[in-house]
Length: 162
Image 1 (cartoon, rainbow, N blue to C red):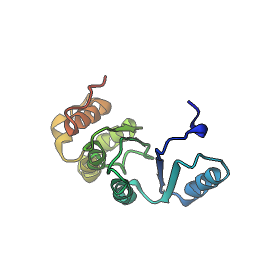
Image 2 (cartoon, one colour):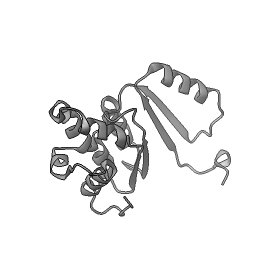
Image 3 (tube, one colour):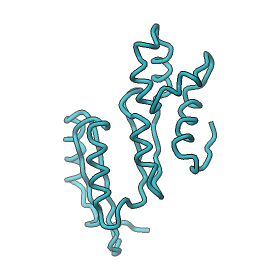
């Protein structure tokens, strides 16, 4: 299928969020230099995922027909900045999927740090609550723990291998 030859009235909305203005400026330049089909609507924002997600979701909800089928690729820098409560906001809508590039090693470092209490707020935000404490075992895989939290957010999502 040739996307450049699309004649359908469907619009494709792309939202990019990055904390660094240098990166968003560079992305905006690349987007401006490329010929895109008129159905492609691009919005590049500077700020953190936490700061900007609600505004993006509000824009999407205001589209004709409400929240359309959505594929969200979330690629945070480091172990923090993507609370699972935000992921749950996306997954609560029908036909919405999320792919997270999860820094499980970074989360493991937060857990393994000298004082877990020091990182409690970060871990609570990442996992959407304090349930990580009950599931945390010395040899537990952070990826397994994250998968369990995601499955608890959307019990009707397809099971994936961990």
